[in-house]
Amino acid sequence: MSFEMDAARPSDLLILALESSCDDTGAAVVRARADGGRAQGPGEILSNIVVGQEELHAAFGGVVPEIAARAHAERLDIAAEAALREAGVALRDLSAVAATAGPGLIGGVLSGVMTAKGLALGAGLPFLGVNHLAGHALTARLTHGLAFPYPMLLASGGHCQLVAVLGPQDFRRLGGTIDDSPGEAFDKAARLLGLPQPGGPSVQRQAEAGNPETWPFPRPLLDRDGADMSFSGLKTALRRARDEVLSTRKGLSDDDVADLCASFQAAICEVLVEKSRRALAGFAAEWGRAEAFCVAGGVAANALLRAQLENLCAETGLTPCFPPLDLCTDNAAMIAWAAAERLAAGETDPLDLPARPRWPLDHAATPLLGSGRKGAKA
Ligand code: KG4
Ligand code: ZN
Image 1: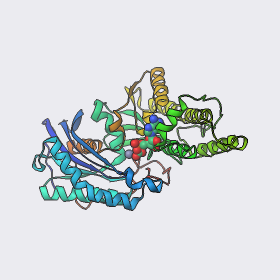
Image 2 (image 1 turned 45 degrees about the horizontal axis):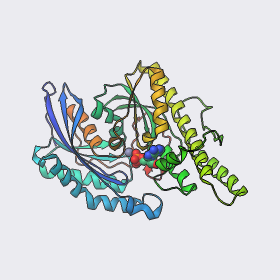
Image 3 (image 1 turned 180 degrees about the vertical axis):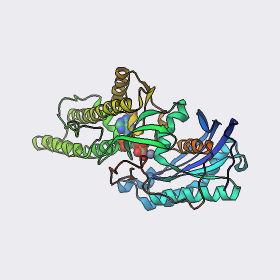
């Protein structure tokens, strides 16, 4: 499929995108201004449909890839139709159709890629396969029109990376988790303490009444140089602390739960903030002073983490940039924007583009992660 763009002439790009890499089925229409071969943020979100699958997976304690893929296949065309309707846009008005082409649970990614290719082929439109992590990393350009380069922290249930965002397809990893993501750690902590899922908000609520100094939980890898993180040991420490309380009493009191949650939350936040501090120093040394520090992902909703990261920004003279939460978590608007960034430069993908379970943002960096509860994280 060929696509001719006169890079010298400003134009409007209208993109329909699909997102299906985990357990949310997303479809969105985004308008972007293209000028001089670049998409100029902020973009305009005309629709952003997200259909969750929580109820389908609830009984299994995690996302079941086969169930997710089937649900995506059943819902993607309905979501796409709803996104077009809500945006007041017909297929023929579009500049391109895009989909997340990885990384993620491969069945779901395939469902999205096949649906987008079918729509593009049927309507005679260009197709683009987008890196899901690039979608997260570029969201600050969609929402705030942030200029390259900028440092960002992506902390969610599926991901944990510190990245230098240098261009639409140019990313350097500054650090990341070597095991669990912080969101997974919060979710596992909640399970250990009998609190409802998702764990992050439950732990945060309990922590409000607790003393964070009750339990001296470890701060993994803080003693080691660099910005890599580890969160899997923390849940073991929490289990031990819980069992220690249970060995002296019959059950956990409200105060016990509050203190365990506050101590656990403090440990995670300290690691994320300290590693962010190092990543920001590394960024400044290599690319100079950044304008803003962007923080995205479900864990960015944590009030303590937000406050501490805002302090870090104040200390380092950076503007904190937190995109609104519905654009921090998985959504198709960010995929449409990432596609617009490439389309503005005249790029499209062939219709035989493969879906990829793994697709690191920084090709040169060595892989850090195994496959987590929500699929491959890098
Ligand atoms: O980005 P997200 O919505 O989804 C994926 O990872 O796909 O992130 C969800 C994660 C969950 O693990 C949840 O426990 C965590 O974000 N989370 C929080 C808070 N709200 C959501 N973690 C800590 N504090 C919160 N307030
Ligand atoms: Zn994601």
